[in-house]
Image (cartoon, rainbow, N blue to C red; front, side, top):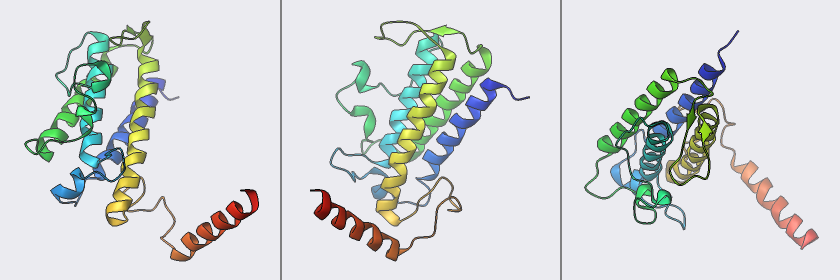
Length: 189
């Protein structure tokens, strides 16, 4: 029989690992440059999630961890946690994320799933179970963003560096998708 808390922690760790491998082998410019109109970039996603881990598993359970202040909490200027300043190193941000995750794992190990915490500014209390579920979704969401950004940089995609969980790149497939989009637009517009 499996332990539900351990199952949740495993899924969270898997998402964390996916996010971090997206930085592997890339130069400084590529991990920092904005590749969407909103400025999404790889290192900023890691910085943001360091702050989220600190908030959700630290502050919420009165187990403080000095993470990146999140703009959404009103503790930083808009989007400050979503990009890396030139004086912030990759090592510093990745190290902060790893320490925040380790602190989160200590909180997860120390508390039962029905432990009650409070997110600053939230209208009501919540449980560790709900926060774990939220952080799995949050981290997977941003790992998906990182997957798209990494693909735009150098074509690397997937959940693992070996690429075994995605079909091989097929330019003909892209052509089929484009043709279907044009045909549907002509038919349904």
